[in-house]
Length: 323
Image 1 (cartoon, rainbow, N blue to C red):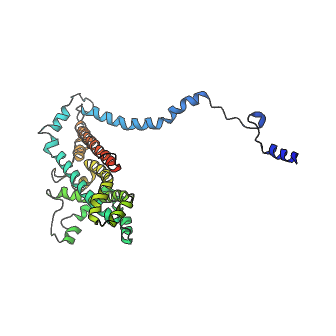
Image 2: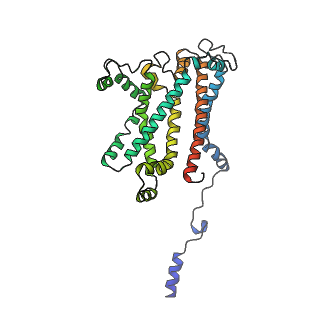
Image 3: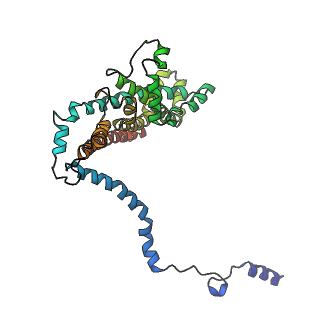
């Protein structure tokens, strides 16, 4: 009996480590491989950084030259002359109203998309069959490239055979005229990107706890009061995220006005991106076009910093760490 127990206990013991016990020792890694491994793992990140920074630094370098199609081989250093030419009161930055048009477009599109997106999110937040169906259909505009959507709307805007004038009984209304082209471009942007705001805000609404709303309903609070006092402060960070993305994207708008009217008629829809495209690609003014892009980058960077700071405050306030 003792022998059997001893045999079982002896048989259940693991063999000792090492070559005598039959265990395979771990393979030895050469020292040079251990030394080189961190550097090899960082190669993709370094390549990505170089791929981003090299064009950016090269663009900054071009802004201080008179590099153009006429001076490809004899470009000279001219300092800040390109910035003075673009930003002076008589420069193309202000004469063509590129900055004013860009800011007007960004503000109008962002405000309309935010208001409509929050409203649609409130409607979809109700668990109904129609709401679930509409939620799936809502993402369809986001699946269409903006250039293709603008081409589709360009035919709809046509004053002679456009479907909008026929449905709305507007007669030969010219949607793409000098006075209405910017409004039409904003309309296309709203149609495409309002679902983005709605889906983002809807995700925030569905992540909220139900207890405060149930307690308010028991106390007799109405829907408007609960939206203003409970829901809106809690989903405010999500709204600011949507505003941040949409405003920065609208500041860089190019494809919709370009496809609709090539930035025209005249300069009525010429944004900063289109101005840079005309100078850089069409006119061969490489340094001046790059100057436009650098100014636009500075504008987007400053705007992003401000909006991110506001977003941080809203998140801290929603978390209760800031009053």
